[in-house]
Length: 244
Image (cartoon, rainbow, N blue to C red; front, side, top):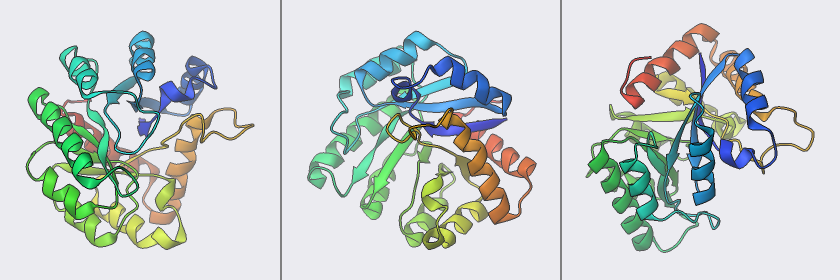
């Protein structure tokens, strides 16, 4: 099956009827979603949906003004076993002063550690600093939409407990080397990172971008569709630590 390993379905529901999108996407083989809550309202939407195709994570984002989640909200959702992971959390060079980001990052990594949850990471700049923090917490990490330096990617990719998503961000000519390294690592999943803001005005079903993404990766890598899906399935299983 095809899995969207990072998206914002609750956010997307402000513009679309989500059940219709999900049902149509399922006809194209998209069976599961690792979605994200960045606000209290989004967390509520996921809980009310209770759709088995969707697993959601929640966290206090390092650089998103609309994020009104607090650390206490993340603890509560973890206690109630509502979330599959803590995130997206991390560090961002455009965010608040780094010491403030570090304190928030470590507080949420402690929550993930306490509850045995994976972590969805947002890393923009500060790759070395992020790695030094992550080393203190031997958790399962999914670095979503990574488009940073190749040396930092290689540092992360050496670790058995870190996976990456392939997104449109690295399907560019200036990111060809990074895309190839991600594929060669065998530690990838696929994502759309779709939100209501990213959807085009006349786009009928933005979830289907995942099908286009997979097709483009297949053409670039010359790896058969079935093999790409199998790699993703294996990584999904390890990341969530359960059998499909």
